[in-house]
Length: 265
Image 1 (tube, rainbow, N blue to C red):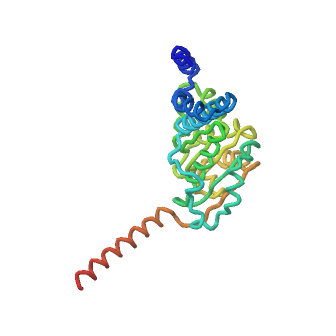
Image 2 (cartoon, helix red, strand yellow; image 1 turned 135 degrees about the vertical axis):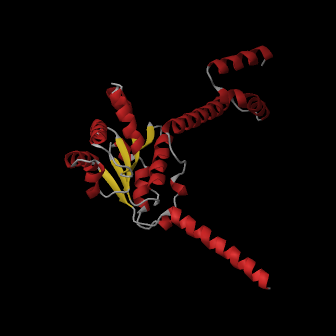
Image 3 (tube, helix red, strand yellow; image 1 turned 90 degrees about the horizontal axis):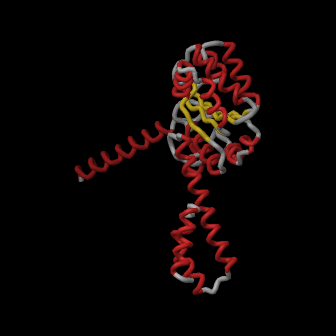
């Protein structure tokens, strides 16, 4: 193969934006010649590596656009610390069948028990499967919807939020919501109902959602749509943050005791 041909090959690869192939081309061609590989095997390897690189880039781009507050997987979750959670149920959710069926998921429980971790981890799985995914805090969501309403672009905003295959709405109930916010929230849920999947986290029981949404009728309408096709995970364990705090204090006390013992030795 002449240098002119190699230059033309590199130019074509660059035009086709096959960056991974450009990076591995020289070394792999040397290996192919040395091992006397046939052309089909060479092409198979090169295109397989390029496709793998493209999938990885698409995944990373999806993650960046999704707005996850944390990047923790299901493997990072300590199920032994939260025995109230049925891991088999979480594993079933990780198959993404609920997403393909347009069903919802709700994580309920007090602060610090891992609701955001699990919701975001499912979002990472969805992104890996090339499903459009977006995370947003409930308070931020309401503020964005109010702003869009004030600027006469609410339909466009709802359209954007309705298109995500998985929308994660975190921390419902942590901050109060007025009647306008509740109305806007209902419009979004109604848009997504039975079409796409929404994952919710909340520190409030469903019976307390009347207080969250400031109106019994609106709360009932929201719950009716959320729970129609839904998996509810009720977490009753302790806070991970309190666990870490207790562990820190235990280690600190051990250090103090050791220094005290050394001083008296």
